[in-house]
Image (cartoon, rainbow, N blue to C red; front, side, top):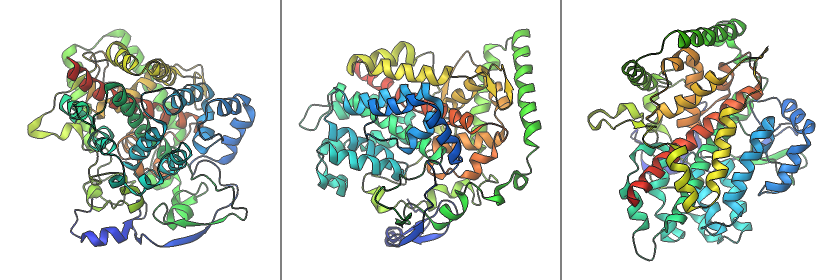
Length: 492
């Protein structure tokens, strides 16, 4: 939080636009004309999402059945480009928010608010403030953490670590929360809380990665409303998030013609498949490739053309607005590259030692019945989801590409699969895509339309939404694995 030398009082009165870097007064409100056809996403043309919704009646059925808000919100509209996945998502979210479980309903929504606040995701915060009040939550709690019960406040540390550096979570963090005393958490309650925190950190990645627009206020008929600039800078509405912004053409980035980019990717996939059949890399070589990829991820984003500011400035000039910061402690705490640990040299999380399938699933299901089955179905659904197409090509096996996306996210969180050749990540994920993945996964609030537009320019928007679903689920699973491993260690 603002370690760049300006006074604390300045930080409370001003914020920085993450797109144009302009310093803005926090209390200023502006009238912004919003066209009535703005659509659910600032990145995807409205007609594409609308077509998907009108073509598939199942979406409306799913909303009636599983939506907690009772309406077709913008997240659901964008996810409806993949109805199969949407069903898994809505069912698991409905279960954790509404069905029988260890935590009272208002707690569930307040935990969602705390999780979303780590990424300044005002879209999710606003949604759950409404739900919190509807389920009988005390309005006073919305004034900030100093107004909530101590046991909720005690979740701050694990919320912070899960969101930004989950590898730092130890059994001591768990013991502190479940220790005897009036403010302790039972293990089932804690597992429910952890599932909610990881779900909403990951969902914030989806919201920013897909450019989800704020919900339109149905009361506003003339399309004009007052907007606080703590949610938007004018540049955000007039410039970077404008679908038709002509200045963002690919020529600005000097990238090869997008058609040849697609052909090159297809060619690399074919070559990798052939190499894999010819000879298998040794275990030693696989380890070396993982370490190389992990170190290379340090330099992704750093000084990139998509940013007009160096990576090292991120933490120093990020000013969190007061309406968000009231729900979190230590707002300056953010993602730090796993590989940049130096002296401490944290051990890599070997996926074989603690897997979701063999360890995490059974623990979570034992302590919070049935959620394990729902999460497992959701992870499998997104990982196996395919239409056997890639942009204009049909009958394509995209397994290799999906696995590279999923495993790259886990690599950035220090999780390694012994049986995966990380050389494939470098072959399949070009730099602009890696920049996008790292931003969406680690600092989602900094995602811009430029980044979204810069990769896979021949691909359909639905394919890019699929990428975001994979990133979201890979992130949630990574956070869960660290938390559940710590709980297991506490139990043994």
